Image (tube, rainbow, N blue to C red; front, side):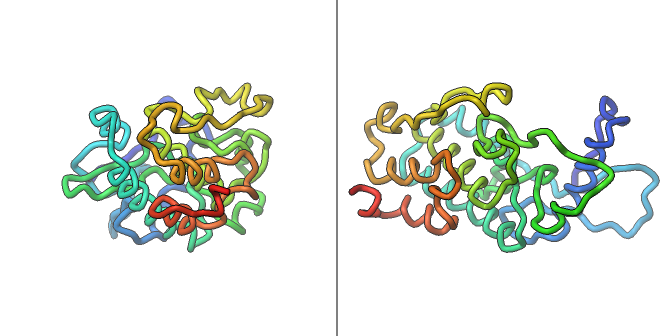
Length: 241
């Protein structure tokens, strides 16, 4: 196992400590081979820490740096595994909200596991007032759905957007809307750049699926992860019309 402790740099930050505790609470309620597990302990704690399973391997970000030109099949298999972990969360009405290559580990059996649940939103609980208010954007700007920058709450479609960014980046080595800063994101008018402009090997039907997952308005995206995964596996003629 690995012991995760709060950074001493934030020991007086109530927001940071609240999110640290929140992460363990969330992880204990999830059970999927594609989500990192928290180790249950019977002993009484004398300081703040979380014990999680040790995963020998590398982050998806590291893997992408070492494998800059993965094929369509590799991209599809990667996104499918991540989606399985997200689907477990969404069934519990939990939304990760900080999905990015740095928060995905690949073990020695090539199993992908989502980590870091500190930003996870839980439907219902999110509307309850707490002593600690989180008014800042919890995720990482380049992978965060546009609605976060407008002060709106995330949904499962927000996670689908982040998953779409990862798929796009795997195939092109680029971000669909370029580098995004939190300060400018709310005012920036973003236009989707076809993945085929960066990689002609990307079929039009996969590009169409990516474009739908990466729509700026949540209601125009996929409503379910399964729809996105299906459209990455075979052409959806309705998207090509």
